[in-house]
Length: 95
Image (tube, rainbow, N blue to C red):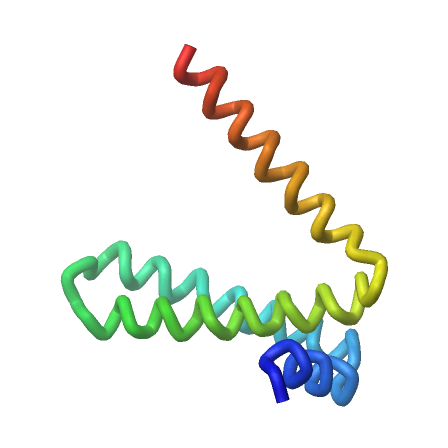
């Protein structure tokens, strides 16, 4: 089973309500990990914690994208637009 198939299976099992709440919790834990890493940048454990929380948030986001966007792929287009907009902003700053 691929990672994508596993993510879909988990998302379908729990559904939007449970996974949206879990995503909020994981985002809070990521914020805390970033804060701790910023305060103690040289501690290896802080970097490991941060990476784990990034993985947790990424998994939750993948699930929410699957639940909310399924086959529409609108989020892919929005991501592309937002990346391009930021790149344009960066060009403007360099001028």
